[in-house]
Length: 163
Image (cartoon, rainbow, N blue to C red; front, side, top):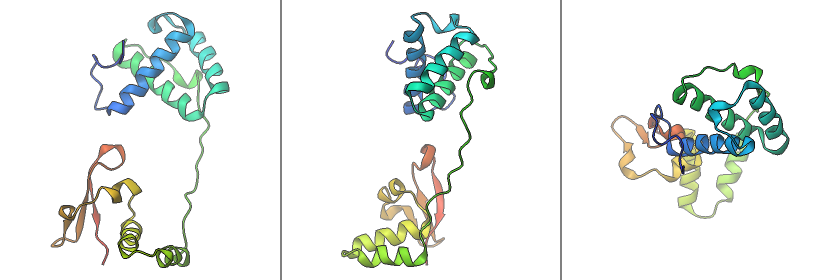
């Protein structure tokens, strides 16, 4: 039972998501020492109340989504998940550097190749991993577009190249 969801259609989920969802089903199974399809809403409320005390909200959300996926697509059961657990909505504003701070970072960088890297990442609004995975072949100088491969969610996209 290495990957409990591996035999079921995974609706386009990435391998890491499938592993996390499988871990959620295993965790609740071990917690109650019974099959997950026999659990009641009361059981799940008890489980999530315990999980909230010992794990991060990120883990709680992954477990909730994993169990919801398992019940919906494997067992063909619907659950009212909001009454079981609902993490608080947190909207964090990202840190945004000023133009002066960006200039300082680039000017403090000694090697030209790193300066070019920082300028590319900043001017195109790329994630670090997206910038690290860029190759010369990803740049289309005719259209001034850059092909970003395997970005967030494993998706490809096109970004405007800086001038």
